[in-house]
Length: 313
Length: 184
Image (cartoon, rainbow over all chains, first blue to last red):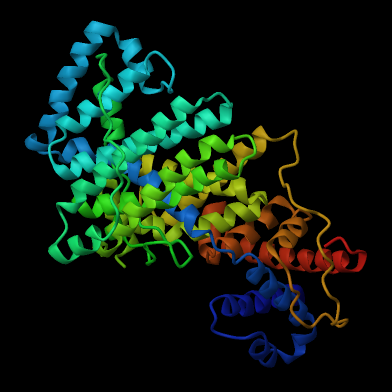
C-alpha cells in the first residue's frame, strides 16, 4: 500500500516536472515525508529527460521533407494537372512511344541510367534536350534544367567513386552542368523585376555553352520524364552566414508552385551539390587536372544561388 | 495549428499542406524515439525518414477511432525498429562508444541532477526490461503522455505508471553503479 502511494506521488510529481508546471523543489516541499526517497528519482528523471532532448539536424529535416515532396508530387500531379499543362507531357509520350518502336523499350529505359562513355549516354542527353524543348513554360524549362543538372552531379559522383574517368568525360559533365545552370539563370532572369535585374546583371555570366543535342537520335520513356519532372519544394534551414533560406519550416512550402518552387529547388541544390562535389576536391584519388572542372561547377551554381537570393520571399 | 483530426482527414484526401503540418509536428519526437531505441544516429536518420514515407503511403489505412495519430506514427516507428533489430540480430544493435567518460561524482548524496548524454542513457536503458525501455523511450524521447503511451503499448495507464516508476528506479541504480565503476 505504501509502495503504491509512493508510486502515485512520484508519477504525479514527474508529470508536473515534464509539463513544466512544477520544479523538483516544489514537489519535495509538498511531500516532505517522501522527499529523501523522491528526490534522487525525480532528479534522475529530469537528467534523462534532458539527455534525450536531442534535435535532428536541419539538413536531416530538409532531406526528409524533400523526399516527402517527391512522394507527394508523384501522387498528386496527375490528378490536378490541367489539359494545358498535360499537353507537353502528352507530346513527350508520343515521342517516347515512337522511339520505343524504333529502339526497343529496354534500350530507352537503359539510357536513363547510362553514364558518360556508354553507348546509350547520347540518348539520355538527347531526351533531356527534347524534354526542355517541349516544356510548356519557362519555369518548367528551368525546373527540368535544374533536375538535369542534378543528374550530372550524380554522374560525376558515380565516375569518381568507380575511379573510371578521363578528362573528356569530366569536362563534358562539367560543361553540361554549367550549361543547364546557366539556362536556369537566363530563364529566371526574364522573370525578375527591374531592380533584381540590376543585381543580376552585376554578376559575371558564365560563358559555358548550353548543352547541345548529339547528332544521334533516341529518347527515354514518358515515365522517366514524369519521374524527373516533379521538382523538389523545399525550404532549408542551414546554419552558416553564407547559406541561404533560413526560416521556420511551414506547411506553405509544400504548396508553392512556379518560380517560388524553382527558387526552393535552387536553394536545395545550392546546398547539396557543393557538399557532394567538394569531397572530390579533397580526395587524393582525383587527379589535380580534373579539379578545375569540378570547381567551375560549384562556382557556377553558387553564382546562380546568389543571383536568385534577392528573389526569395 | 488546426485540430489534428482535421489535419489527418485533409491529409487522407491528398492535402499536402495538412500532411506537411503533421510532419512538422511529429518529426522531432519520432527521431528522438528512434535514436533512443537503436542508439545509432545514422541509422535513426534513415529510419525516421522511412517512418514518414510509410505514413504518407499508408494514410488511407489510418482510422481515427480513439487512437491518436501520434500513436499510429509511433507504432510504425516501432515496427520499423523491430524489423531493423531482426535483420541485425547477429550484430550488436547499438553501436555506441561504451568507454564513455565517467560522470563527475561531486555529489556523494546523489541529490544533484546527473549530467547525462544520450549515449549514456541508451547504454543504461539496456539494463531495463523491454517494457520499461519502451515506456522510457515513448515518455521521454517521444514526449508522450501516460495515456498516449498506454494507447501505443496496449496497456492500462496504471500499468504504464508502474513501469515508469520501476524504470526510473532501475536507471538510477544502473547510472550510479556506472559512475562508480567508470563504465557510464
